[in-house]
Image (cartoon, rainbow, N blue to C red; front, side):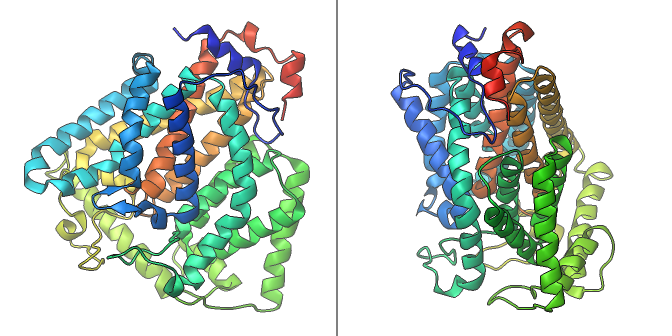
Length: 467
């Protein structure tokens, strides 16, 4: 049973976009949980702004992600909500998924040691989903506070996010570097930036803080992103299309369309072309169009088709030796370097590539078909649950529908980008992804905890919070 305290978050539901009232100070949180929430939120922001440049803070093998993990486990225990989470459909599937991954890891611990543990973080980061869900249930008002904080984050990220990403491209040689590595501060990959930009876009489109200047800046940088990174571009476009269809806002859509077309036509008319220092390809409208085309059909550009063919060949190899080969049940396990084993190594001796540029197929290659199917079942169950919760809340007229729409949009961007890069294997995307997963999971539990009678749309307070 969820304590009656859960009714507080339904009486004061989270609002996506609209300016919330200040949370009363009479809400007292256990000090340790309050500390953990603050640290976890800060880590989320720093991963989004600095990327790998933040992930390498610390001393090997203890970095900032391990520091957060050190506090996550006692925080999860302190919530005393683990049993409740396990009894939910998502929790039961997640337990089965994790147990299978442990089964695929265990035989290789002695052989590969630290490498086996390092490869396992792709699913070990699920601890952050557990703790995020438990905190939302244990501290129901945290969902409302989350939306307050994210509203402020959008105001910061819409300016600092592009600055950090463009700095990574233009000024990489002049940025500070972590000792003993080639990792600069910041170091944002285009795919990572595209995912967080999609989350900000979903928030803004639903009525969050925005002006024509903000929207113009957001769209301009997304167009530049599309010229340099197909995965990030596709993640943004899929997520943006979903939120536009799910929660259309006619006036904002007209503004966004007008600004985007104006910028593209201006660049095309003036034939603006430039190649940033250290960038893999030229920035121009032609490159943007070729990037879009190459996602679905063959392009005329060798630099785009070369990487695409390399990925597809490797993915087919993984499919063959799992579904039709000897690694059907448990894959190749955790610890082995898949790029070396499969014959697709393109990394350096100091920083070798370990996994395919597709996090979903990493599960297939390392945990076999059962692990892969459990992964698909877990993500599919979560997504369908979020979509149903959104429509249920919208049917009842509750502003909670905006929360579920935003989380689902963010999730779409994560899973699309994960299909084009080594994404969830690192804390830069792994920690935020599982955090979003956990927030949706916990919010779903709170939604189901109340009857329709206590979740009425017609109340004055619900109408006041409507987005």
